[in-house]
Image (tube, rainbow, N blue to C red; front, side):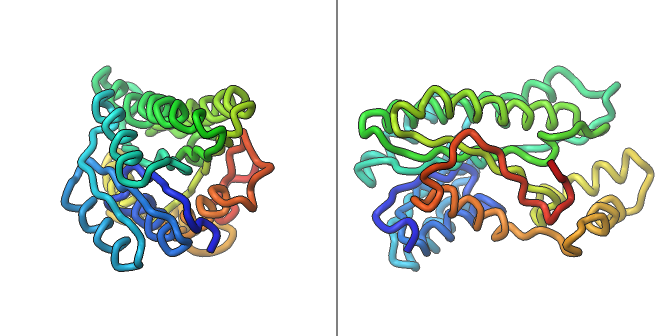
Length: 258
């Protein structure tokens, strides 16, 4: 098993990519703390991890609260004794016309998708430095590679994640800590249902049309699954990726090439 004996944190693990990643880590031998804003979904993910024979610890968490970030670290150390892997997965999307985006919406997106990524990274890195080892994986997006007309705040936040990843990789390499990011494309999750609905409304398109058009543009010919993303996270968390740091990897079926 790739992650035997490892302890991990996956934020936003109650559903979607976060849940798929937490479960894949457990199948590969890791114990996993699964913080989520929704306690019920966190508890369900933890229960499924436990059914796989690993320790799964639920936790309600708001990643924008510094006290919750510190509690996350303390809980992981208390439950598992150490933190080997952090996956900064929690995120949101708001679809707005550029001329209508509010300051509050901008702040919320950047607070969750970028600011929280940094401060979760920082808090966990302080613990990892003590052991001179660790892996931190951040959720970017192919929208962190190019701009999108209805996603200016989301794109800005995901571009920021790439910069955070590169800077942290350089800062933490002397401490034996690797930092990488993953950039998913059109993933079959609740988030893309929301994007399709809101973008379609703004563009005057029927439900499903925005998503359908994007999926049709994928060279590999199918929508991405949460498990596709979890597979890449698992490799990057493993010792097989021990010489990789500071990189952002697209996992999008060829939709974004760079």
